[in-house]
Image (cartoon, rainbow over all chains, first blue to last red; front, side, top):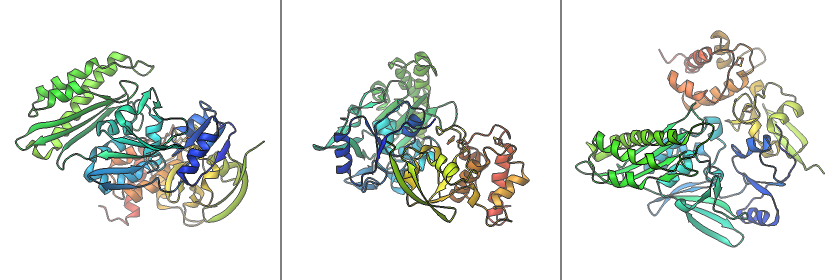
Length: 289
Length: 163
Ligand code: FES
Ligand code: FES
């Protein structure tokens, strides 16, 4: 239960970091360490180089620009949890974060770290997908943007090159008064979810749903957008039966099977979690009443 | 060849300087190098919370950090939370009075966790306390005594403001 030997680097800039990534084979970036450190302790990963980016300048910020939220890769989950700006403009992110680990791990854990680790059931990739985030990465050849929908290349594998790193995320903001719901099923509080659902609803005056975003985590290898459910919700007025029918479309999602749960159970949970998240989201929408 | 680094750190108000291997965990640094064995190690992969310390006043699991990462930092361990040799911190006193510990293995992590929590949320509900300690495993008390102690400490720390 001790990390294997490695060469430790603590660069001060992103440019230095990507240069180290490009130059050294079998290197791992150490961000908040709440996933990498256990993996090192258990020797699931045995990097020759650990590049600690905790002293890199300029990667920790939360700001609003052009009607979007911009969050730096090294922004701690706690800072996001306590940021007024996030609570006002993207309250679903705060709601999701309260389910991420525990206070102790949120003090260290980062947004960029969670996205790069890309656990199938992790909350932050899930809300990033629900909000259609853009992930900003930087490599030796410069910066590029990746839409969250394209960011996962497969199970726990982001579609970034070995010499690239995530530097920040831009989150589109929904209109004031939109409804949001984040619901998850886990065995214990703070565990990764077995299945989690994120729902955003834009409800127009009169109570009709104008736009819906329905996303589930923990079902497929990465967050899955439920387009059929979104279509089914659009134009609805919040009837229990409509939510039930929309949620039922999630039963056909291709589901993973592992020691924790068989595929049919994850699909079943997807219908239950999305329905609950829809009800919660509608209840919060300013125009729902 | 071993990858070594110098680490200077302030723990409980005292400065220490050591040269350590870069892969040394902060938990092992605190216990073996600084010989502050109040910080306990239960799982070494971030699950049990026994190793929780306060880093610049914020809780962190010391088994999920490298010693080199705290160079220049300020740390408080369980040894540093009481106001003096003779006096317990109100939270420690509340643990004693409410059967908040039995074997004491989880206690350092419970105390550091709850110190931060009660600063964040000075007047918590029982449910909020239970969520706050959900990342700390106790195999003795069944948690009830710990929850009682935390609620009692909240009252004491507020100077009896709460009825
Ligand atoms: S020893 Fe660090 S969390 Fe268990
Ligand atoms: S008192 Fe023994 S583990 Fe908590």
